[in-house]
Amino acid sequence: MKTSQNTIDFLLDQLSSLPQVHARKMFGEYALYYDEKVVALVCDNQLFVKLTPPGRALLGERCVEGTAYPGAKPSLLIGAEEIEDGERLCELVRVTADALPAPQPKRPKATGRKRRRG
Image 1 (cartoon, rainbow, N blue to C red):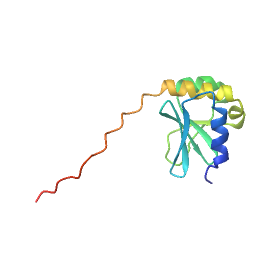
Image 2: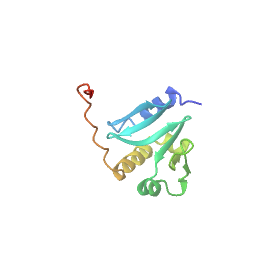
Image 3: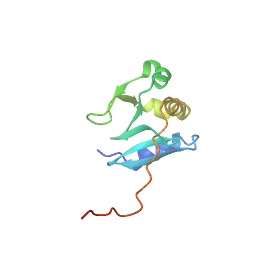
Image 4: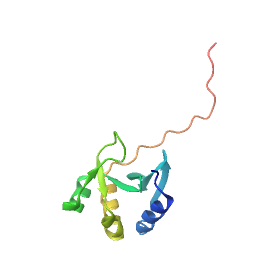
């Protein structure tokens, strides 16, 4: 089941106090970005936040691991109760992003055609 636009809209509304949050559709599902870092995936209408020690500590006993898709790295599967608490969800996204490395710089696109040897 694909993630609905309503789910993404609700998540972005819950995270609206973080000005640099946005979602990008990828492979039929969504990646959630904060400060240009992928902090979570939204698959099958479920939120999977990247697993970091600060995120795990913030959730404490409510920490549940899951995988967004077969073969994916383990993530924090965020339940409805956590999603409903926008302030706590924002804090989870913040501490997760802070614990992740900076994104790799993008390569410049090639500007011309390759010459053929001949």
